[in-house]
Image (cartoon, rainbow, N blue to C red; front, side, top):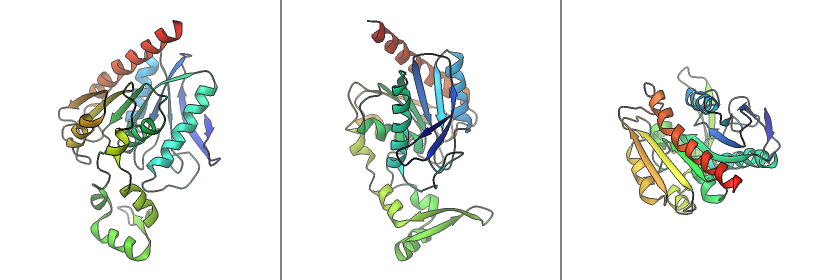
Length: 256
């Protein structure tokens, strides 16, 4: 299924259609795609419960058009906006948005800007976007970006992976999740899920989100890493009731 974003780029997604009025939109993380196991497992679990789900690739990722960019959280929030507007225009109700890792940041940024989604699920999102850059890119790389304006990142095989420009780096450094989360509507329910042994984004980030998001529920999964390698079922068992509760509420509101 293809939806155009505001740059006329084709966003490719997979629609788990159950003909429910309510839809859940799932957002992947950094250098990931709609085919990531967390996206597939949660979408399948929702479908099995009669809830429609849409998992898609952000521009520049997976099968979608566009060029991959480092940072880019706000642009990806606009991709999410295009998806939500598409389904709203088709007389469907987006009951919840869920994102993993960078996708968790994207759904929170969306909720801070557009107050039209009643439930948000942030799975292992990063609270402080300044952290993790040196870990991912290396100190030497940051110095080269400052000097040259960009740097080409190579993968473990020594092949070109992606380009980081000074502009995209500064956009990430200037994205203030604390400030954004303070703008989330108090009526919006936010589920925060994090693994206790997350090796990419520290579990403390989840607690920081919980301190400032007005209407939140915090769930730490003991022993889980960043991608929930051995805890997929537990992740689904936490996310599913939260979303089902929202869908039931949406259905009740619609019938009143």
